[in-house]
Length: 244
Image (tube, rainbow, N blue to C red):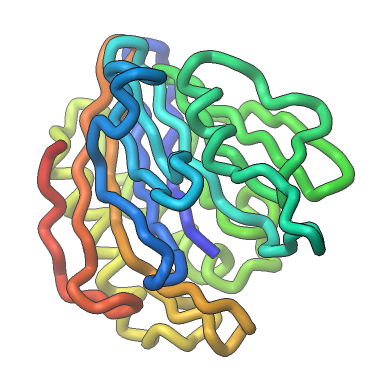
C-alpha cells in the first residue's frame, strides 16, 4: 500500500518532481538505492527486492527515466506462479512497454521520462495506460487521484497547495523540504489511521509498514534521487533524505 506523489511540469524543459513512500513487510529482505544489477542493467540505480531481484523503484540518469510500482492488491496465485512486479520496473527503465496481459498481481506502474509521466494500471483483468496532465497527482492502491483512497482525499490538496507557491526554478532542497513537511504533518495521524501516508497496514490484513521515503527530480538528461530509511518501520522520525 505504497504512496507516490508526482508533479508533472507544464513545459518539456522543466523537471518532474516525485515523492514515494515504500510499504513492505519488514521481514522481506531488500536493499536501499544502489547499482544492484551491473550485468543486466548497467547504470540503473534502484531499490532492490532481494527475494526476486526486482526493483520497487529504479532510475537511469543517462536516459532521464524513473519508474516505481505500487501494489493494487496482494493477491497471489495459489501455486505461487505469478511473476514479481519488480521485473516490470526494470523493463520500464529499458523503455519496454508493459505487456497486455502481465503475469503478475495487480499494480500501478508510475513511469517518468523527463517531463512526461504515465501510469499503467493492471487489476488482474484489464490493462489501462494513462498519461498524466500537468499538475500534482497522487497514486496509491486505487486509481490516480482517487478520492476513494482516504489518504489521497485528505492529503492531495495539501501537496497541491505546497506546489502552488513554488515555480520550477526552486531547487531540490526547497521543494522537497516543503513536500516532506506535508508528509511530517500527515504522520501526526498515527500509522493506523486510514488517512495516514506513513503507515502500519496490519489493521487492513497486510503485514506491511512504511520503510523508506524517496524524493526525486527527473529531467530528460538526468535523475536526482534522495532517500531515507525509517529508523522504525511505520514511524516518522524526521529523516533527512541523502543523495544516491
